[in-house]
Image (tube, rainbow over all chains, first blue to last red; front, side, top):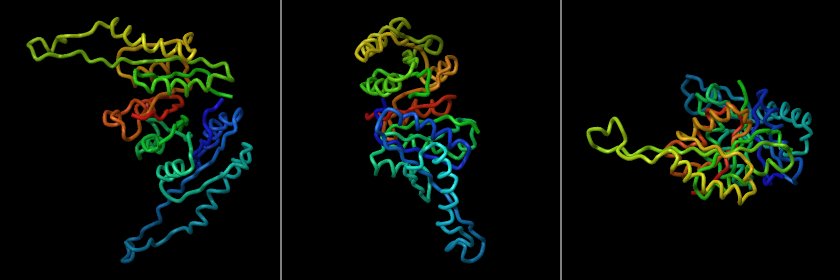
Length: 147
Length: 147
């Protein structure tokens, strides 16, 4: 039924990730469709007030550690939903550029992500759903999640 | 396959309406799903510069005429896509409140609409997709259309 061939599901580490992934899964049952999971780690190292603060962060978590701490819960969720064979992409950096760039470079024709609506905290910060909607070159399914 | 039971498709009178409707149709094939079409006529009567301009518009098209002129091309499109038995709702007023209110009052769980992206003229005016994304209480599928 689905006209989509490559679906990109953006997942965060909140409780809503499972809900969003299940909504994306509905596109899989009747078609040969590729489904890729993407998670962006928007990590800002702690900048101290010392002399060198403008040059190097005073404390930062190594990238490998950041990636592995995100990987564990996401892989567990993949297994729970039977999606353990689907590719999981973890990017360091802002969610919007990471999602849009991956979609552009990999012929993604549908991006599925959670949307917190007008009441969510994310709304104040400029939501990922909003940014992706403006910048993506493909369809976007915003799955309503409740804070 | 679809987990959606009532889908609301927002259509305008541009060439993109057929593309958006076809994307919404993909949800119909394997499930008992209700699909409703909605079109909002955001009509601002011409206000003259005369003395009475602030009280009454100097020229306005009757509502019935507005509705029937929108109905014709939309009904033709319904027929073309085999959707002539699906309900067509035509509302006078802003698209965002019309779509969101109808969705809230009719247990709509997915809104499908066209999105023009960052380059579209609609972006400058604040796009319908953007407004609906912020205000809807259900999922939103933004179908990328090209200007």
